[in-house]
Length: 310
Image 1 (spheres, helix red, strand yellow):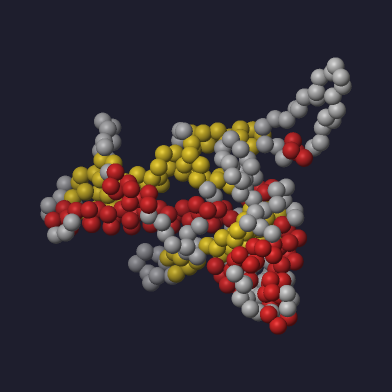
Image 2 (tube, helix red, strand yellow):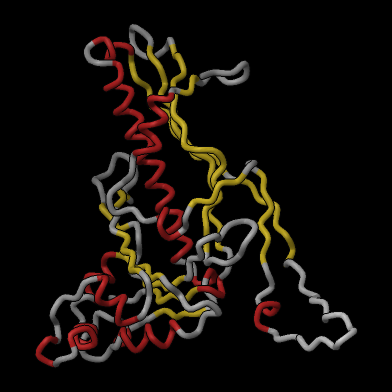
């Protein structure tokens, strides 16, 4: 498919690869679910929290009119999804020496993977920003959950879960935090109910049941933080944090009933652009991308513990 403006030929085959491809251990789509928008520019509407928790007089006289709500949307924000994409040159020589679909498909997968990696980093950065949560703290020293003698993650989490306007239904942790917390003696004690079980590894489902939340999501991805040309430096995408968020079923630009969402215009696409200057026989540039914007909709619906473990 092509048009009269863009030299990009959008390939249904390559687009299907780009849409289907998912990186193992990445959680951005789970913690900031995608919501379709009709145009790249859209309006985000946010309710005033006080309009939901200030009780009006609801008594109606026999012939009188009901009281009228004076609620108003907070400053509607005009926002735009941002285009995220990459190119990879594929010489015709590569296609001449093997199946065309194989060379182009591999390039599409690499691009899709790196686009997802960059999205994962963006979302993890939002979670690592204290201002995106109405509640929470940065743990230090003996309060960190890696201190198995002095810290008490169960007590800390139960107290924090009660603070947001909507009780969080989802716990989001970096892998480093999950590894420590699932072996914490006080967590094991809360799950298994006996001192003898202290230190026994617990599952996500067991901890979720104790905390009375729906799910626990763990970010496991890695990325390279070294400068180009230097030895690789493997680093966790998700820092040592633990956040509780309320994720609503219909959260999006028209409803603030969720901690955060991702506005998505269209779907992920992939295609080719002919480039005669690639190699001796020319080639194509494989291009893939998407148009998205990650938005924190209601900081009041979440809490965070930064540097939860040492």
